[in-house]
Image (cartoon, rainbow, N blue to C red; front, side):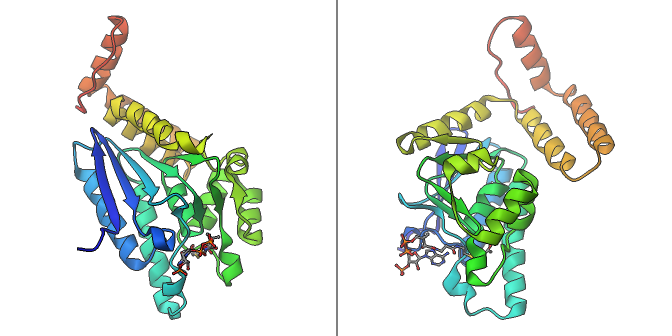
Length: 260
Ligand code: CAA
């Protein structure tokens, strides 16, 4: 039997999804995009999963981009469809009602950086290289890179990475605000899982409130964003977890959140 193109491993409430095409540096062809989409849809509805960690198989790459061999043959309508397929996956990840952490273990280029940017947090190994090299192929980013890089790191960084196409080090990506943490290569898995486990212990409905409010706020005026925050804040007073969290503080004990 052939190896699955995306592997799934559950460590208690943390689901680890691994893009598994190491011989092609985990490049995203149609099949990989579709399989990832299904994997994230399943993670979204599985109540046992509270956090998703996304990574790439092998020591070399998170994901080295969209599959260039597959793209080379596409017609304009097929190119457009391919972009839409990738963008839909990125939207699904970004809108997942639970946190997604990218564990960037090597090259995160083109569609690979776009995939990492769709995740809610990014932890990168020191040796990782990140970039939008599409310009070198006569292309532009097609899975949301021009838009997410702009929103994440600002216009100067978005234009620099997309116009010059040169990858940056993990340390530079941290300076630019593209990744949240840079850790020693040997520490990548342990440190990412530590973050994921912390998230898994948090109140899921409150985590969702943060994701919804921050993502919505990025797309609207301050006034609307504040209204949205207030609505989310008020709703959380209907949850058992809010009573548990505040109650545990007052009783000087650790809370146990039940996702209710
Ligand atoms: N698509 C298809 N195959 C790829 C790939 C990609 N994006 N990246 C690497 N591979 C394949 C190589 O073709 C090679 O396959 P074979 O062994 O069968 O020849 C294998 O993975 C190993 O790669 P290299 O031999 O090139 O490894 P290297 O260590 O010499 O170089 C690298 C590593 C610098 C990352 C180089 O592979 C590279 O530049 N890859 C392409 C990066 C890129 O341009 N990404 C953007 C793609 S376009 C895109 O993503 C558009 C979008 O936004 C939607």
